[in-house]
Length: 486
Image (cartoon, rainbow, N blue to C red):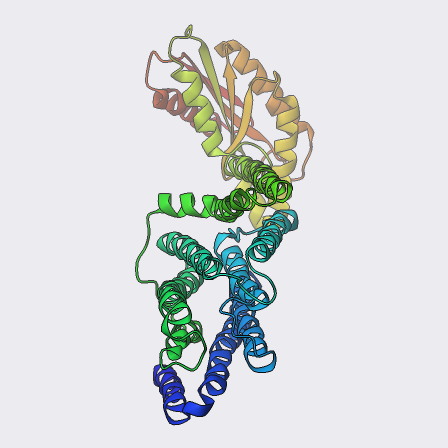
């Protein structure tokens, strides 16, 4: 339906010129103003529908379309009210040139999530500098009245061609790396417009305006409608699909390098202006280089900050993955990793590893009597006291699972392990946590101890021996320490 309306628009333009030849210029201006204004409205509508982050590009495109419409309005003023037949009046020419500045800003902006306002302000500053240099350059070639010679008019047409080609290449680069739905649809619309407008504008400027029909009112005027109507169609239509998936490497490369497009445009124009206005051109070069450099510095600082945040989150997640949520002690994974590291250290002198397996006696009955919240509180208190009584800072106490704990002693003999185990047993018993379902009437622990030289036998054997010793302690009445030595 929208395509049909666009075709009707072009056909109406052609028909109006054909059937009203005496008013061809006036009716042509109506359509040439309506087409970019229609593109402006559809871009604003799409921007409002997309949300703030995705809307910035559409709103900048709307600003570019509006600038072109104002250029056409200025041309209408020159033709109909000032009766100025000049092919390149300064005001309309400048507005036709300035249309590309917000479009280039829309293309070059990276729109990274969390990008600072300062970085965006630098982008706007570069765009404003580009607009000012266009102003200086246009009025160094033509006057407000227009071009004094045909060569000047041809130069302005060539400058418009160069700007259009630059915008087209920039849009093609961004479109090639669009991996998100809103980016794909936005850059497809921009690329469609830029390709059509570059071709139509070049033909119209060189072969119509500077050729056989310097005034509007030609049957070729509707060609100028086409790029704006095509953009309006692309902005109006929405789809949830993306036609292809670019490589992640290309996406990262283009997205990180896209701000360079604005700086390159400013630098190129500065070199041109340098020949006429040395200080203005030099200032443009300084702004381009410094602006991009400062922008890159701030962007890099943001990346470093984000990386540090991600690293902290990673460390926190790693800590959580190795910490028991109830007791705050290292969990089974952490115990296994420490044991494996101590057991299989390559190139190190073999050390003796002593392992204590600790079990809270009759804990199921404790839970049945007092409930799980009380059982959790009991485990937390036992864990705290065990950690305080464990001994050396280098040893590792962790929750092995359920009501079981384990203590890894590096460089400790079996006898030293037995001594530590007895101290732990007495510590828990002295807490005097009431447990009427236990023969001892208080919460107690049983401990199995095993010891071996690291790496001489499989690690599983050390754990199995500690389990076996723990089973012996429980079988012999609990609240006691038992040991197995290799």
